[in-house]
Image (cartoon, rainbow, N blue to C red; front, side, top):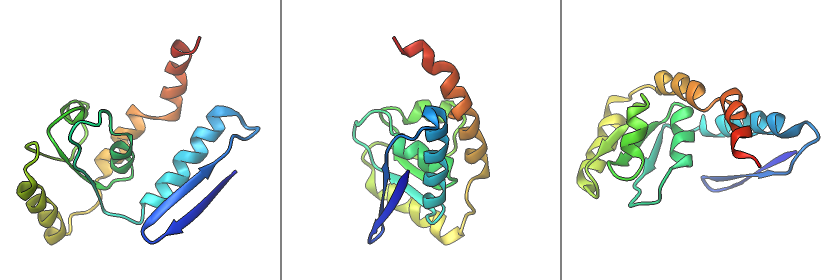
Length: 135
């Protein structure tokens, strides 16, 4: 159902639906993404207004340290109980300092974010609310 192609440090997951249904496919993809992201320690997301950062949340769900500016959806993510480095908008020096501090201190991955994302974005929870959005 899925293939992973690597080009340098970039990985692409190719996906096609299976006979197992949407719930099976969602769980399969979540597992594959977590396996891939386990190779990394940080997620830099210097958004200047892209809206909801799915990639950022996936990074946090894998335990990576997240780095963002305090614009768009990031304050809301913090209010949901996710821990990450949120810096003043477009303050690149502050962003660099935060990244360097995590690197110097060799901070471990965030088990708190892993658990919190499993609560907030679990397949079970998503499947429970999805029917309300389908026509």
